[in-house]
Image (cartoon, rainbow, N blue to C red; front, side):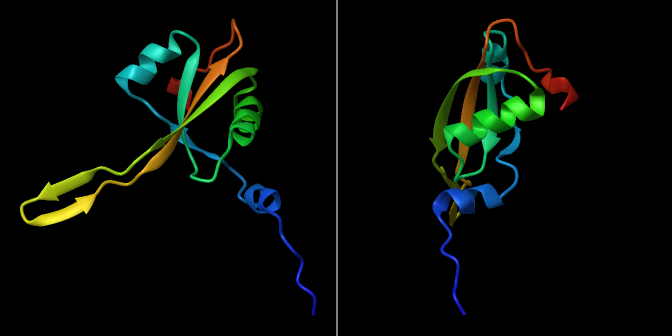
Length: 105
């Protein structure tokens, strides 16, 4: 029996969706007025995958993608210590004149 060697690009393409949900916050709402939209994405996502999925899902043209790793923060309740979950954000800039209505999402 021979095993097929799977490259990292093939492994990434196995997971169908990269976008998890739009990130709705006060800052994200202010950015959307300037043509930037913020999404929470999977940890292993890269800029190319995010760009392709946003263009396909929302039928818009993406100009630029910026990725941010949000690190877990330490929390404490009484003597119990823990952490919040870390996640990855993508800030997507659309080409001029295009927008996404996140209220319908």
